[in-house]
Image (cartoon, one colour):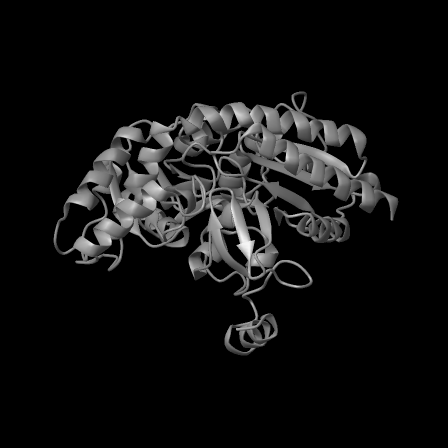
Length: 428
């Protein structure tokens, strides 16, 4: 098909919410490693990875080979019959996950993993009330959209009772007008009053991303989670950690993001980068919490042999190539270079994140969100062959998440392109 025909069929046969980046959408044809190629053969350095999903690079030979071998051997049985990949994966997850997390339930996406986590927490605590964070994103089901505190992603409105939203630790735009560390973590301490004034005081769970993804890579102070989780536990709630975007070494130095905050979840959910592009959702919990999920409940495709093999192969690559350490090392380098850009361009209001999950908040005077500037920067970086992401409530945060295999030369190349884009936008 020609480009024009693809655009026309996209509009005719796909629902309008299936939106695309760029004025002229980029039609991708193939990918390899850190690069993608369009229909004309033009090369793009991928620094967004399908929304943090291509964790170790496109079409990795080792992962692809193992996945294809399994597909030729046994593609699907459902969970009604045990198989080697599903039990091997569950055992590996119990080995890697922090704290006492041990028993897994597999699904097809992060949304389903969160649905499972909430159900599990409610059955264990025999309560239904949930505390989530403002600016958080949880997925596209009715429950997940109601947990989401981001109007752009709440298409169905607020329909499910029992969900309350606490202030997040958005230090750049502190809801209390404070400044860390003099603020005394007022955002965290406010959770106590939220529970006592808006709930029955009998919590099911507190759910949070270590670094808020769609919210714009909002990164809490180091003491934040210890304070909030302590409050939640005092009211009987469990801590559900959403590692959909921060898991698998993305934050550098640790396999999972929450480990940087030294807090152990009762339930953890994973997806995206776990299988390097294959659809997967994972919910893992402490034994006594997981054991509450009894009765008729299954996911037909959850943990099927092919997907389980893809996850195991991805984990193997991350471990063998020491990519958690590489994400830490390259993350420091990337952050250093982004901070240099911040010094040069007043439009960069904030740089935040950990490892290879870094955000740039683009602003005008008095921190006014500059979504228009971000859109211009996107067009210019695309012209120069760099793919990046965007997020934030106002669409003014550039999200930078290269594969964990990234090297200094590629970061340097990306920074030069970003620098030229900011120069042109600043001059216009």
